Image 1 (cartoon, rainbow, N blue to C red):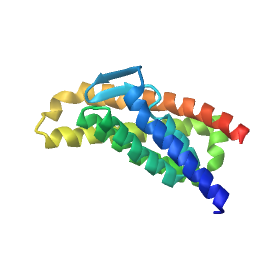
Image 2: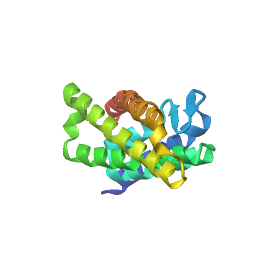
Image 3: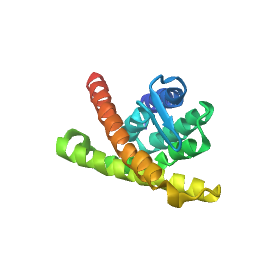
Length: 175
């Protein structure tokens, strides 16, 4: 990688990192019902990083988790944010191998849905592990875990992916 490409990579990583940290802190539109939380746009920096590079995605996901921690969210929500490492890394490596996915509407929609499922499964598992180790009875949390966190995450993820893809395509044209 030449010096110009390295500089662009570092600059884009820094910008997406800053956005990932700031969104949970300053976003006025958010719904928090622990363990569920929905912060509009909270995945956009992650998705854009994922579209660009696996390394960038991992870095931005870690930064996003720190943003949720600094914003004072409950620890279960911070752990959910860190669980993004699974869908973000998986998605980034898939796109590295099949970059044309983003340009094919049907393939992109399927990719978005599968990522949403992986995203939801990882977040539900993070909640189960958190509550199981804290002595909470997980058996009585079916609705909270599978409807609010699971189904809610699929919808939230798919909306943020769609927004991120629109932003990414505009930025790609301007390059």
